[in-house]
Image (cartoon, rainbow, N blue to C red; front, side, top):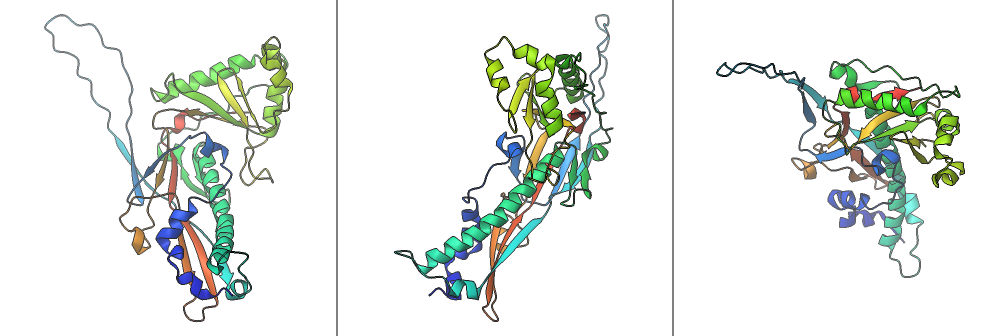
Length: 337
């Protein structure tokens, strides 16, 4: 019969658990899968971002021997941000452990570890969903808390930038030239990027259900593909898939099943650059509130096992993460309705 003594095994130490938690399988979220954010582990919780303008100007002609014009550098502005603490937990009681029996050649330790991993896997799913929620907020320029309304950081305000107005794609009008709408949006994004967007950058859009359906059913879109081999693919069900058109990649974004907690409004699309230099960053701080990780380089998650030392009636598995998802150039973010 398994007992609470099992949790004295090294497999349940902070170091071992934090290593093992990275191996728990989970379904990658879209924004994680496309590698939008450049990840960097840091040693502190405070992150400083320097914003420096790079306005270009024409150089006038001048006669030989005259001193050259003096270009004055723009003054940098430092913005300070703080990585966010995310924590979730579960409790495994002694009555549950005592009822576990070894099966076949499995040891009692293996049986309990399997149960523990399943519980921790559920907590990890919650953590992954929260990270996706933070990614989704950052690519819209506003990092929100779990209630969906409390603003952690408004990156437009932080960097003193007016949020770009939404572009009306007029998908409800049959005569709309959708390709030109894409071109209009791309020009705005590239010009606002001031060099951050290169030829290697690709523009993506997360689309709400209704907006996406109108796009793929629009006559201008269907006519473009009717003589191509891709026409057959266009006639297939494209629900929750991706579709390239007009120099953009459109994703029918699938969030939570309630289509509200982690989601894109059904009648909108959010445009963002993928592969733009330094635009989207993810900083990971260490779990400095726990001795084994003080002054270490930050990693994605940290797992901790807490025992009931007084009564030995339960153990708690806890999972921590200290990320900051940030858009350093919110002026490039565009949206459409």
